[in-house]
Structures are given as structure tokens and as C-alpha cells.
Picture (cartoon, rainbow, N blue to C red):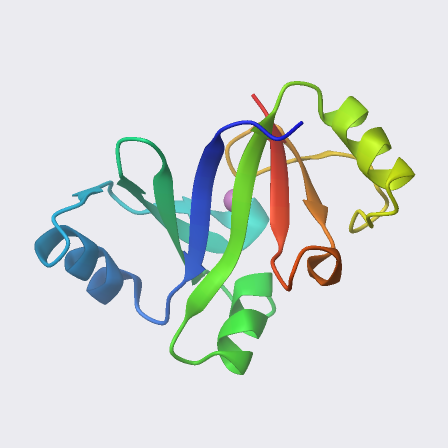
Length: 134
Ligand code: CO
């Protein structure tokens, strides 16, 4: 069901420091920061060729990334995102397998203007998984 790994999202305490490190130390192709006010984050993408690393910085207090950084002040992996062909079919299959979908179970328009769903981390080895329909 899951397709290509679309991105791995890291919450970072300082977006500029993190973006510079990914560019200068790791040699990554780093995008300009993009503010996504509806989602409460500013995002920088690192293109790794076969996938992307999304560096996320909270735009405001109360964003999910701010809460994550309160618990993990050094930052860390927030979620990983897999592409799916049909997000409703994927959801129904997951629910039938006993997995939990966060929120009301209906896909929302995600940070990249595509329908997304998040799966409960307790069902996937402590990892928050995002599904995105391209
Ligand atoms: Co994501």
C-alpha cells in the first residue's frame, strides 16, 4: 500500500542553523524557507535525490511542532511521509487492520496542498506516519 518515501520531517530548534548545517556540513540541496501559516510551521526542504528531509520550525506557540520541541529541545524526527495512490482506500485498509487514524479520520489538505492523513504513532513503533496522495 505505501509507496515512495516522500519526506522525513525533523523538528528543529533553529531553522537557519539547521538549514546551514544540512547544506554546509552534509552537502545537501537546501531550499529557501517557506512559511506555512495554516500549518503553523516554516519549512526548509533538503533534496536528497531519492527523497526529501523537511526541516520544520514552529511559526507560533501552540503549533504541533512547538509542543514537540518543548518535549525534545534538541529537535528530532517528527514524522515520515509515504505516498499512496488512493488515500481513502489506504485509510479503509488500515482501519480494517486495526490501525488508528488521527483526528476525525478524514483526509486534510496538508502542507504541500495534497490530501494527507496521520496514523497513530503507538501503532507504528512510536513513529508518526503521514500518508499523502499525490
Ligand atoms: Co509531512
